[in-house]
Image 1 (cartoon, one colour):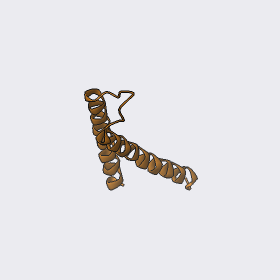
Image 2: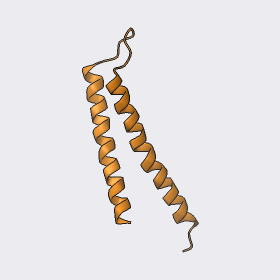
Image 3: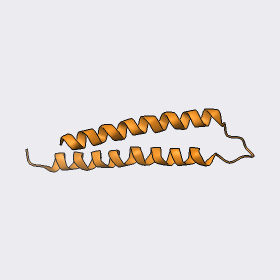
Image 4: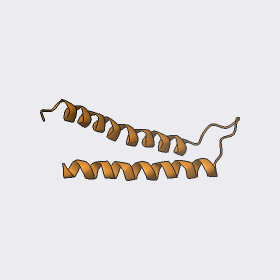
Length: 71
């Protein structure tokens, strides 16, 4: 269980770093109606989504296992 805990901590730190990086990129290069978003910002946002989705899915699976397990 210790490995799982540190994996979630690593995903949490990665999510925070990616969130801050996406905000910095968006601030430095604000969207304009005539220009598409920069490719780097799209990649960072996609990585942020997966960094949040995977630990959330694992947490839901563990919750279901804990609730269905014997006392």
